[in-house]
Image (cartoon, rainbow, N blue to C red; front, side, top):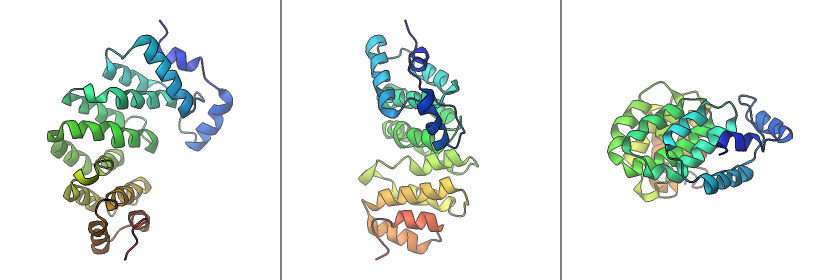
Length: 218
């Protein structure tokens, strides 16, 4: 029985790995497997082996692997099967956010995995959101700001604006970008609310530009 690591390493490409590593500022080693091929390989693995018996255990192992594609595969698996996980899985997701942290994995976890988990277990939101947004880890703060990206009309606007307010003074690019992105997304549902928030607060130029990108200051 071939494990997922062996399958992926057998399909690596040194030629493709170099530009992928360069794009991520050479912070991570890559196998050189692009997104489309990654999804095909994962589909092949699941067809042959079936759904992982211990999904969270496998995901933790994949996050320990050196090559970046394994973290992407872990997030792909959680996106596919995460809705079957118990509420306690949030502690694993929290661990993953702060492992090998960069925008690529954090955004996948925040925007899909944790987003879906909080939608299934909304009682978790108050305590974890407070912990993350009031802490000093920028990736957990980014997660708190971004987890409602897909909530549309179900967005808790008060929570969104409160989260943004707490990090408005941050000089971190990834926080400023997250604030702008979250506001821009919510502006699709309530442009006037977003305009009012932007007008009444001092946002970093990047955050303001992103927030008003599709609605203007009008």
